[in-house]
Image (cartoon, rainbow, N blue to C red; front, side):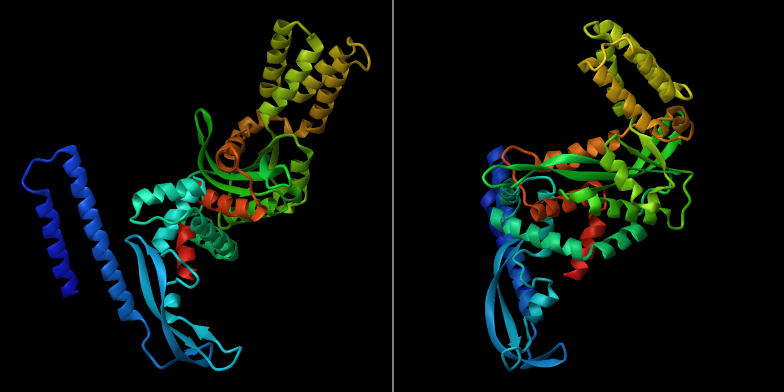
Length: 439
């Protein structure tokens, strides 16, 4: 410590002397910052290396899982720290025999077993990769650190972190449930989920398959209607029937309801049969109020309006606005819309393309009739639009996975989505705290 203190004073004097007494100009100020940073990085490397040497186990033998392991050799391994790369000497121990245990106590004590980056640098990598591509992360960190990791090192770190998140997910969720649960200010629980196409690696061409995204939100009540207060985001790479996503949704609902009673519980989704079939497979979701997204209903109503009125766009718009308003504001609005479409369909040529469009809209409304009681839903203080999850599809999946030229493996994409959902949900520190403890 005394030696480092003396060195710090000497190096600081050199930096100050190099600046001189002249007034700062933009170039000289930039040079001063660069000099101070280089000095602090150098002192940091020396201090960290000295601390690691001090803490390395110096013993002829140690206990590893109840078996004796003897000191074999001391070897260096390069670690990437916030101060730059340092060669760290570590003592390695191994027992006798081919299956004998082995250990590097310093690596284990620092959570650096099979790791290249120290935890603080690894968190920089993980945070950046939740938002940026590997090459962009490498460029960004090269500006922030004396020596930044390569894109390959970054991808390797994210791959390992993804596995660790999956292994520690239950502990992570328990920690969040305890320390950062969904807002307790609201009284309404609303969940939504949807599909979004993602580009997968294919041979020889890219393959597009449907990933999934979900929101579990708390709403409060205002004079203008329900107001979203807090949201947990979930996302999964393509899988059959959104199996894992729905399991996670149910888990979040169960945690949210633990020791708490909500005034209302709703599900707001679009009209895909697979979405509602998935909900039906989970008894925990049966007690929710099931709501068809109003804007998907209005979209199907517009298709019918255009088919009914043909080239008369003004008449189509006028009819659509009238029936749409009735659907949203009047009791039994869905029944009224069905009757109106059936009556006007009779005026179209049977089996014509326009007639079939109207028939499809009628069938759509009949299928979802009980999920279209919008005046009742509004009176209950529930949202009637799925804009929350549609925004999540864009911000969680599309903005990160669907940039030009991107292609993903299932595992690689999932590792990034896990990082991104914890970050966007505002629960990053709790997730990272568990990973640091488990390292």
